Length: 195
Figure 1: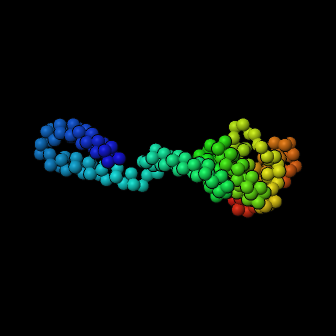
Figure 2 (figure 1 turned 90 degrees about the vertical axis):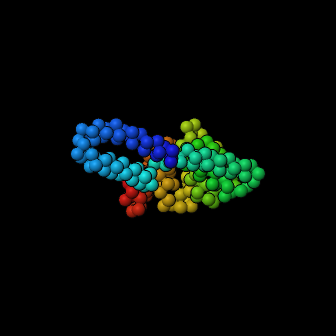
Figure 3 (figure 1 turned 120 degrees about the vertical axis):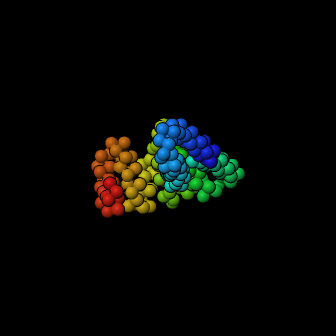
């Protein structure tokens, strides 16, 4: 970033010199004012640029972060290969791949975690449902209705379970069940405010 800043500053100085030097020759009596104006504009521009880089939302090191995440996932994959029963690692990998929109890998890890926990872990069940629904193939090795029923029995007011439960019911052409689940969702005041 420093090299980019210096090159921008150099280009800016050349442009200012090219514009204001002829003006200074034309207005010899006011040349000190023009030089002062040039310096003020240069310092003000540098000040704005430096402050912008500190407060902007742009990730100046985004490429490095992506590589770091990918490296962490490779290490996590290796850890899971050596420790296939590590539930925490399976859930972490499933969540990470779900966030990165790699739904097939997320589904694989959540499925392995589900086999360890069966119907006792809402996070695993919801991760399995979400990654299965988001995957373009849309194939589930478990029955989605059974999964969502398990999730709703664990947490009857869980907004994510009710939302996906409505979608699953609708895909099974059970409109009444979809309406029932979404009605519970809309009755939840915290969720209703977000809708």
